Image 1 (tube, one colour):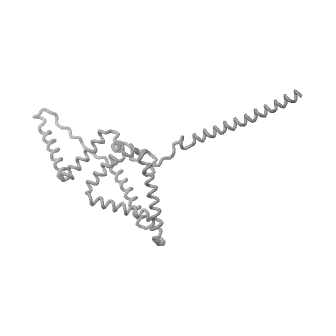
Image 2 (cartoon, rainbow, N blue to C red):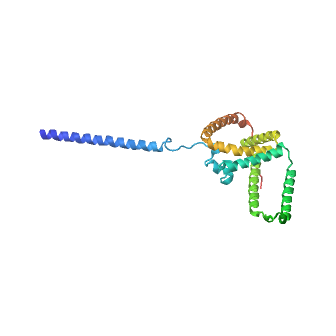
Image 3 (cartoon, rainbow, N blue to C red):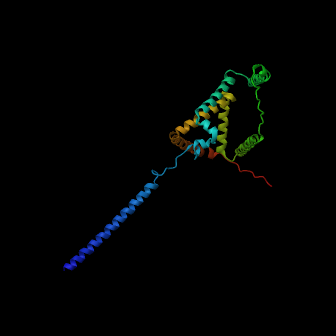
Length: 253
C-alpha cells in the first residue's frame, strides 16, 4: 500500500511538473510574442510621417543640393547674407531710386575701361607694374546644357497646357486657371522686378524656417489638406459631377 501511495504521489508530481512546464512555456512564448509586437509596433518603429508635398527626401535634397541649397538654407550665413544683401541693393537701386539699367551698365563700363586705360598708360610714371587683363573665354557646353534643359521644361509645360485645354481633366483646368488668376492679380500689384525680389526673399526665408519647424508644420498641413480634400469632394459631388462632358473625338487615320 505504501508503494502504491508513493507511486501515485510521484505520478501526481510528474503531472504537476508537466502542467507547470506548459504554463511557463506558454508564458515565455506569449512574452516573446509581446516583445515582438513591441518591436514591430508603431511606437517603437518610426511610423511614416506626412511630409509637405509628399516629399521623402530632406529639404536640402529637394532644393537640388550643392551650393545653391546651402545658400537658401543658410549653411554659410556670411554668403547667404551677402547674396540677399546684394539682391536687396539691386532692388533698391532699380525700384526705389529708379536708376535705369542701361545707364548703370554704361556707367560701370565707362568707369572700368577708363581706369584700366589710365593704369596701362601711367604705370611707368607711378612705378607700378601694368595691369594684367585676363583673357575671358566663355565655354559653350554650359550654355548648351542650360538651353537644352529649358527646352525640355518648356515642351513639358506646353504638353501639359495642351492636355488641360483638351478638356480631359477638369480639376487640373480649374487649378491652372486659379494659378493664372492669382499671377495676374499679383502682377497688377507690383512689377516684374519686385515680384522677382519677393520670390528671391521667400527662397531665402521659407525653406530655412520650414526645415527648422517641419515637425510642427507638417501635421498642420496634413490636417489642412484633409479638409481641402473634403471640401473639394463636396464641390465635386454638387457641381463638377453635374457638368455634362461630351465624348472625345478621335482622329480617323
